Length: 347
Ligand code: P6P
Image (cartoon, rainbow, N blue to C red; front, top):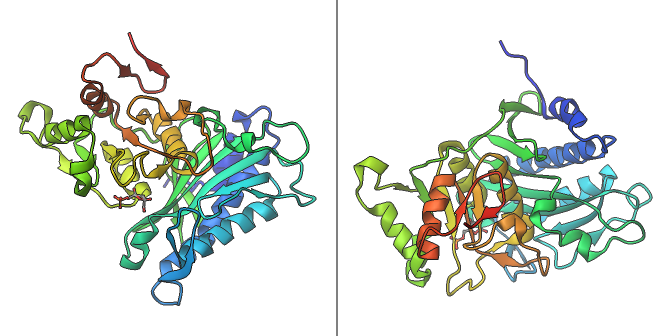
């Protein structure tokens, strides 16, 4: 029987991958894992205690906050504060960055951008939700961290991950050396390595998009959807449409089975709905590290320099061959092709 390897053991084992790190990143990842277990405990008993429903407050996006949104935000911020390895937290739930200036954190090297509980509209109906996080090294040398430390492009991430609170709770993360998945074993309260070296299949048969917005999609996206729905035995079409409405759940499924997730611009979201800094960038880093591709329709997601913290972006990410086929429809030709694990190349 294979020995159980916990998240903590794995992080320590891989610490040698970071010559400059003296354990800070390892401790930061463990802090996030601890907060995830605390949030998981509440998510799992939601419905039994008064933690479902609306908090009666709105976040910076003007979206109604669920009680669990607020709870999760508080738990991750508290864990990052007490861990001492993070100097700034940028959260979907907070308008401004949170600067951690305690004695133990003021010289901390890392910035964390986080969506503490994504997909919260699904909480009350018991559908999988998730946490998404992104970690950068501080670039400014001293004094109070600068907003430029937070608005780094996605390719500067040193780590990124997500937690999916589903039929089981998993933590999936990368530090730029591949992607590994850990499943929470409630009997010992530990995340245990269950999906080593995760790779997304180059081809898939699943497309994930909210087709309710079809009339508002750019023509190229409409054409691609029709391509997915056409019958073509050789290419395994028509593909299967699967859309949960929870970014972490939709992308996690596609990471395992192969597929493409699409959230284009639409009349409701002329710049796209999903946020670049704490949703698109971490998921793009993970998918690229697993051999996939992530673009906004014309740019590699990880090459976009953010203008502001809550900036939105269109996003198309998943299996390499599916994203490249999409690009043929978006660019009207196949002049631009993307190779996974590398930057954009246009002949
Ligand atoms: P729509 C959840 O609200 C979320 O932010 C993502 O998790 C999800 O992928 C997307 O929005 C769903 O948006 O417009 O299809 O309901």
